[in-house]
Length: 233
Length: 338
Image (cartoon, rainbow over all chains, first blue to last red; front, side, top):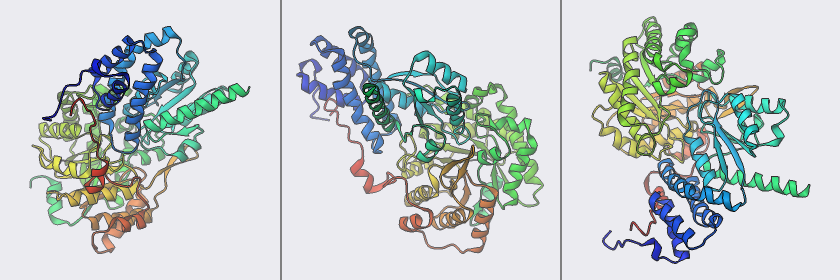
């Protein structure tokens, strides 16, 4: 650490600053991220560009290393925390400037399951990718999922279960959506340690997501398909 | 050696633990989302049959139906005020079955994770976690558990908090972690790191090891990781009976009794002393495991290839220990922090 020199963020040019912010996100440095966001805004950057080029791009690196087993939950939580701090500054500005919306997700763990670590990670990574996330918490009965989907006019439903005792409940939710004729209106993603792709298919989900990074990629893929479909009329 | 498990370990080369709790209770009609622990008072006969089925299959140790019996987990079902009662009764039912078995059977008081993330990353402080485990431990102790059995832990901090909770109750304990993420625990702990951590605890477990995770092959790789780290105490292997599949409204694990018998023999060859199953392991699996452990002699330590050949492939290329992991190890790239 002898050659360590304190970097003054405001002295970096735009390109260096953005790269530095990617590093700082990776290291979970919350205050540095907040500072970086403010500097870019002061330099006249559009809030949407700060979001995508500095924060989302940085979280993509975190997501890839998490997927590859290089980063683990504690590091990702720190990174997501830093991201969130940056987002807090950008959120009101994004709304004001009418920046494009990536998509909206309702997420929660199923009835009986309080294991919200995976769900929180997915929520943070989805926010990190620019999605709007409505977290309905843990232990959700089917009514709560349905009510939130309708109220929020969401695109995606994310369900999480970490126990073999709770994972079958996901099917209860999907079956109820079918009964109400609303299943096709939503992209349903499921995740949790005991699940696998076959299980996701068997219960009628659109996809099983192995981890938070995969969830983000899958959500993006399904959203672009949805947009294409709408465009094709 | 005042406790029954230590005494049993001195007289035997291997001990068989039990199988699944959740999977078995589902088959008795537990529905998704219900707290299994409530059955200790609501359906005690089902819990008795669960315990009895393990004993009849030859288990030397069985775990009580108290996995989710801490205040944090029971709170979901508004039963956070019943921690002591549900654990005491869960253990007392076990005592009853063990004492009626006519041989030495160990009642192990199951203690699962709180489900919360510990500080500073999360909100659960060390002191609160210790007290939660302690509260549960006292109930299990009063119900007559021989030993406490902490399982499916992901975070080193939570394992340490559980150790302290057991110490406060003055109880011997065993503790296993779940290695389900690229060969490590969800929080990134490797098998070798667990061995180092266990040996440093002020109130170390009688035995330590791995449970649940991703199938029997991955669990075996973790056991080899423990052995390579030269642990001082017995190793526990409690793997899942394959991978969960969904059939007609319920979960079915694809591991056959034959596969689990093979796994049991391999686990002993690898160096595990206490061998059992986890999710999906039914009485017929336990019977096949017991028969194989009795009939087949201990063999040489298996290689990874032999494990994959017998039990199927691994879920990740490396288990996160040794040279293979060094290349992939995280390098903090932060230019600011050097």
